[in-house]
Length: 85
Image: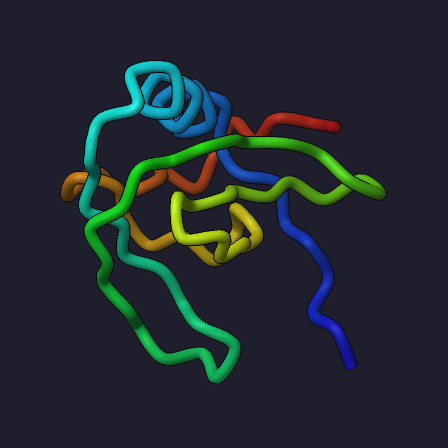
């Protein structure tokens, strides 16, 4: 069964969009499909919405839901003020 999507906070969403625009390498920590913390140096290629869920596309083609992100460049989402899609 798929876990329900939980919108992320707007400030963190803005940070992701900023990093995607800059096309610079970021340190992305996220939960993989086994809920294990994974850290990867990557370039954020895109941040998009599909069927009321938000996703991040990495330069290697991997896609993750935004609510699985733990941190970007050491910055963690606040967990409040979520953006509604």
